[in-house]
Structure formats: structure tokens, C-alpha cells
Amino acid sequence: MDKKKLTHKKFVLGIIPARGGSKGIPRKNIRKLGSVPLVAHTINQAKKSKLLSDFIVSSEDKEIRKVSERYGAKTMDRPKKYSHDKILQEVDLLLEWTVKKYEKINNINVDIVVLLYPTAPLRDVASIDKCIDLVKLGKYDSAISVYFDTRYLWKKIKNKTILPTNYNPNQRMPRQKENWNQYAENKAIYVMTKKVLSKYGRIGKKCGYVEMEKWRSIDIDTFQDLKIAKAFFQKK
Image (cartoon, rainbow, N blue to C red; front, side, top):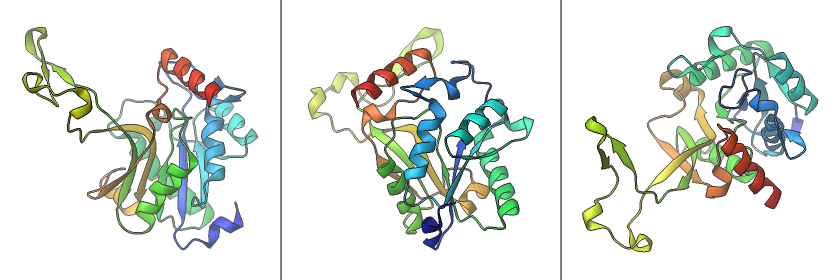
């Protein structure tokens, strides 16, 4: 544990959930992006954060834990019930379980929890600390990372008909003149107080946000996502 990071009054714990049973891309969390495994990119970002007091990788998979430890992360096993994606708010429940176990093992009281998915390898460290600051300074009880979204969204209804959800196609403005006030959750950073986590989950009643660039907001779930991430990573 970095002693310099313990000078902060509130203890901020980062949790990187990396299960082994990914479906879209088998063994996704240890596939290479550049020269290192996917999970290692988030580990390196957590290590560079100025506001994380400590962080761990949570995985039921021995190989993922071994790879994570090789890149300098502490790891923690998890119960089988949190090793799939079939439970409502499964990750939130995993976070709560992990915090309690971490506190018991280390005899430390966690104040703020930071969720960093390894599937967002292009996030920037500055955005992690900005999100933490929003909660740490007491302005918000939770915070997320987003990107500005100007897409025209539709939903499917009965009889295979689709309807617009965020604009009126009969009152369409030139795209550049649309009065957009729309952001997409990019699944890169979630920050919450421990109290909010236990009461609501990762999002509280007063949620702040940090805007990230769209190219940094890739969430790797399919092989196509991985291909796009590799292209951006090479150019970066």
C-alpha cells in the first residue's frame, strides 16, 4: 500500500471486477491490448491515481488473479454467486461484499468505493481522480463517467414498429443546431460512498458526472469492440 495515499482523510478503495466467464469474448480480461492483458491497463491506471488509498482485483478465476498480481495488484477471490451475470445488481452486491471483507482483513474503515471495469482500458487517470473528488469533497454521494451523445434514439414496439425516444423527427433541426442535453454512461468509472452502496447500489440520489472523450469511452464487450479499442490504443 502506498503510504503517501494514506494521508487522505477518507479511505478510498478501488475495486476492479474481472470474472473469468466472459461470454462475448472468452477469457476477455486477460486478452492482450497492446503488449499487456486487458485487466492490466486498469491496474496501471489505479496505481497512478492520486486519490485511491488502495485497490484490489476481484476474480473467481485463478489465472486472472495470478496475472493481476504480476502487474502489482492485490487480489481477492469471490463467492460463486457473484461469478456470473444472472443476479439483479450483481456487481453492486459484489462491491458491498468485497468492501466488508476488505475491512475485516485490513481492520480499516472504507469511506468511498470506486468501481473500475477492466473493459474500459482507454479511460484517463485524471477522470478517475475527478470523479473521486466530486464525492470526496461532499458535493455528491456518487459520480459516474459519461460522454456527450448526439445520437437519435429509437425503441421497438409491437408489430416491429419503431418510435423515436429523444427527438421529434418532424421538427428536426440541422444536427449542429440541435439543443442536445444528453450523455451516455460509458461504464468506465463509478464512485460512491459506502453508505450509498449499501442503501441503493452504485448510484445515489445526488449523482455527479465527469465527461470523457468519446474515443476513451469504448466498453469492450465484443470482438468488434476489441478491434476498435486496439485501433485507438495504437494511435494514442
